[in-house]
Length: 487
Ligand code: NDP
Image 1 (cartoon, rainbow, N blue to C red):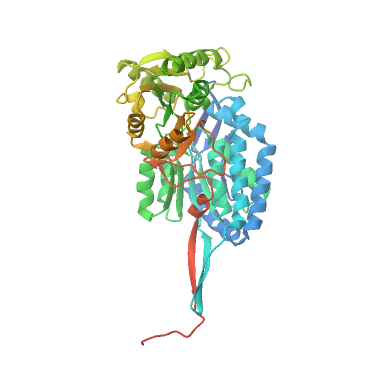
Image 2 (cartoon, rainbow, N blue to C red):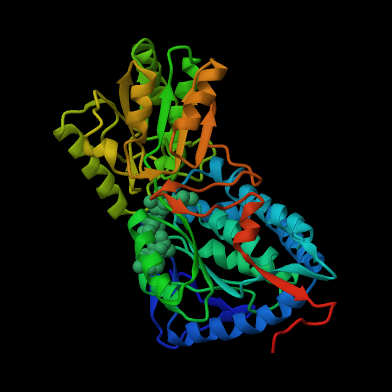
């Protein structure tokens, strides 16, 4: 059976490359090739820049409300095609349909809708200076680039294109090589909604195509989502032309469960923050610190619910709530971390093995895994695994657990469970993380800025401030009086 071949999306349409180079895309739940994609060669790259320049001239000259109208039409189309798009995400990522059907497209559409609404509200300032005065304009940057990770491909494409386009920029987006299709569908939807050609181009390929974007002198800003190590390379490369950067990187986030917490709620948060999207979420609370007084109750309930309530299998089955990891390589990597955890002395409470569910026997599954008897210096407690592997640690002192929670080079997210309102705020204010939850975990509405402290990132996505990251301020001084000059 022949599989489809997708081309790059440039200047409002598909464009064939000249090298003929393609890559294959496998469904992680079946290990079968489902389609091929053409790599963005030099010809495509030049065309992407040329059309983005032309698109930018048209798009940036439109009024914000005209731009807003087009983006809102795209939002309507995204929502109308929810199921078609969600299915693409399931086949590309291996995540369960029951998640993609209600989260991936919706949260992407929400963010475009939010920035479409904000665009006409962005204003400059005016200030008198004697008889003279000055005013400021918020102007777009020009051509921006987005580089995405593979865990929420469409959502990431929406979170980058929403603010970039609302502010009047053109965007060239490179999805991960593991999940290339939904960005093309977004490009088709933007085009159908009336976006001028070239304003949103999609280029395909692996690291080399990403590197080209970071080096291109025609690109003003890079918004990147991916690993800390890759982020450092991107920042270094972007520095050669002093591009602005937004970096959404990895984490090793702590969840603190105090002895007055609602333990069942805390277990729900811990499971959501480690097993949702089979553990492939950047903000996951992979270090769970539990007060010694509720430790036994916590791990007993955690073990029971993990073993009884998680249903791995064919991700398209609506009853399945636990999918396959993105690739065989990633499955092997996660299994290696589990072996290291055992070798370094952690105890397996549950899981710890690869799975071959009857409905998806060839998929790259790893069982939901919980380690107890963990210590802060263990590799599994220090490094991001990006799979369904939770480490549980014990504490008995508030100041000490805050110190331990902060003892890491990353700071993406953090959570606290306690019924004591004063303690909740006192503790969360001391945690070095950009995205925090009290008696909750993982929710992230479009209005809420998200991004990391320390090496987890630079800048923010979502929320009002993000629009500023996609504009530059022009100050204009207007002389109304005669110039006083000594010359
Ligand atoms: P990677 O860092 O491996 O890749 C991210 C993107 O960068 C991919 O499109 C990749 O291409 C591309 N890329 C790779 N090398 C370079 C380079 N030298 N220059 C430019 N681009 C490059 O991350 P993953 O895709 O593996 O995603 C998982 C990571 O993403 C985790 O660390 C996770 O925590 C983080 N993440 C962070 C989020 C946040 O908001 N903070 C959200 C989601 C994920 P290709 O894959 O095609 O090779």
